[in-house]
Length: 275
Figure: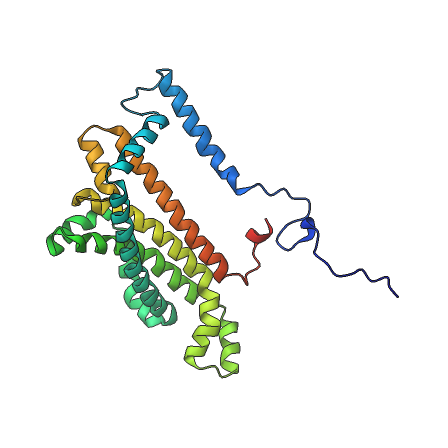
């Protein structure tokens, strides 16, 4: 009696998700490589090893960004972000619906999947002339191009996720006489969520890439327009500033999507949580 230890918090080494004796680096360590690269470029340019007009030093790019902030940089960022948000939402929604239909019904998969697999290989710039002919040069072709970029990864994630659900799980659901909606909500959707979330993250990344292609062709505002303007005026600092902003916005949006994925898949006990 009295030998049973009192319940309390586990030591960090034994806490769930932390392997005993394994060092987990702080997330800030991810900034180490970019910081070293920027410092290296600054040194190479300042010492004359690399021409400054071809590769401006990071300090000059920072000054350019400060100038753009006082001009109209916010509007460029806002225009690109809104286009990506609208195009991604449309493409992802369509990708989920079509992907779910293809994953659930082999007859629909036989009918649609070969065509989508062929269209998936078409480069983004190949769509631009056709969309300009059909939709003009306003917002519509830009949004459609971004939606095309988001559609295919989401479609692939939804179709493969649902088609890959363990058949025994579905049979158990039917043994419990679950309705079609209940089977989809309680069995198919949770089992397919990891693949679907991977598709959504890839779709968001491609949406940013297709946005640049859209704005390079016909736009008067946006980060793609900044890239084109910097090329036409010979301002490598503006081009690099726009690329830096695209990288930051892409990383920020992926981080938000990843946090959403972590919350949605909190029930999963995978290797990443124990690393």
